[in-house]
Image (cartoon, rainbow, N blue to C red; front, side):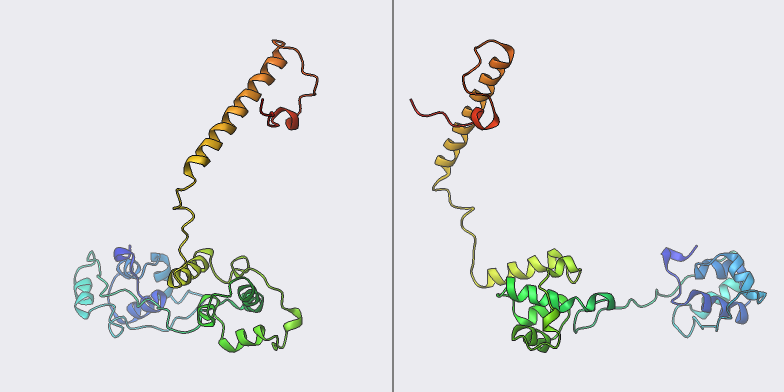
Length: 237
């Protein structure tokens, strides 16, 4: 089994090189490369459908020559990989968008320009991976396909996530000093609680009256019991 789940960057090509250039056992090669032993055997017997060009793991820095020597001396020795393959890191630049989604970008840009005028062109570029020229063309309606552009939510189109959009809007609002104070306003807290209690009391009273009518404990009111009449607020005495 591959050590810590790490395997060479090109396991089949690496296995082919080890088969041709070392005396390691098929088991050792298979475990080091994360392959099945039958795959390695097929390479050695030229029975694979694809002929792999060998890749030297020593030159690639994935396997030390000392490890190969230890493995050749002891068939039960487990080869230790020197490092895992380098991870691909996203470089600076426009956000990558799948080809199938690129035709939706103008619709997403139009939606942002209409619904979030506070978002800068630079932020839109990063959010859905476009250019300032495209944004400007859609804004002044000089885009070559402006007649076919329909404003659509970029989240629905799959151009960005709701979390990313919300984060940008929140960051801009915070930078502009737009703080929502409504939730923290307690001036009407007492009135609000009193109103809630009043509505609960009225609901409970109406429910009690309805149950009495249904069980025959009181006379049926002249007015038919409906959702509208049952929960209609009674006039003050």
